[in-house]
Length: 187
Image (tube, rainbow, N blue to C red; front, side, top):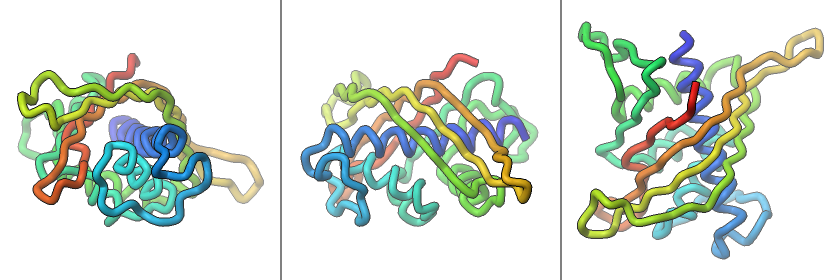
């Protein structure tokens, strides 16, 4: 359960952080105004992160999944290693299918009434592991809050702070997607 909530918080934080920084640093997004439409084509990482953030804010699983590459991989912190696939092996990462399941559970959970994510940073460099130069590395500090309001007026939920590294590359249609997401937080 700790790994699930940690992942839920991390996923939410990263999404909002990336989207939030895209709005602040991308002239195409129109500055700090709230985005109401998804970008298409997604020909820059800034547009990708804006779509990613909007998908989180609206809990739109289909739009969220559109932000992830078909070869997507999420690299877990060691504390979160567990058997997520049910094959008896400890997983250090997971792919698209488990990401969809985890995020779908978070978006539909009563414990995720409100999702707030702030993402700081604008580092964007060409990733050294791609000789084509198309894969970009984005490092973001995130602050994720997933919470709900109790009937007595108090607030309960989860809070995560940390660092995320995103490797983003264009798919076959030229739209940028998140190919690899690594939680680099210190816990």
